[in-house]
Structure formats: structure tokens, C-alpha cells
Length: 75
Image (tube, helix red, strand yellow):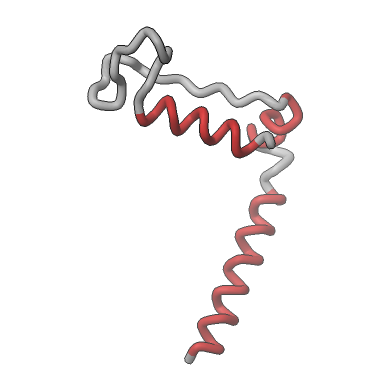
């Protein structure tokens, strides 16, 4: 049972990787990676994701998540 699961899991992982590279040339992913820039937009009027605080710019979950993603992606 566990062996079958491992084989299926491996197969799905390989398929996911293959699909990623298959669509690489025809997607925005290539443009983003070549440019080295990911633009993230947010709307500060949607609470509770935004908390007004002029000292920190735009604190809030969605802004922090965008920054964390950018920091992680381009190390």
C-alpha cells in the first residue's frame, strides 16, 4: 500500500514538473524570471488586511505576504 502511494506520488510530482517547464515559454513566468521583477498590487481599503501605520508603510497580511514571496523568490 505504501509502495503504491510512493509510486503514484512520484509520478504526480514528475508530471507537475513536466507541466511547469512545458508552459514556461508561453507564460508570464518566463517574463517575470527574465525581468527579475514581480509586481504585487493591493487595495488598502480592504480591512482587516490593511492597518494604517505611516511608520511602516503598508503593514498587513497581503502586503507582508507579497514582500515575503519576493524576498524568497529572488535570493
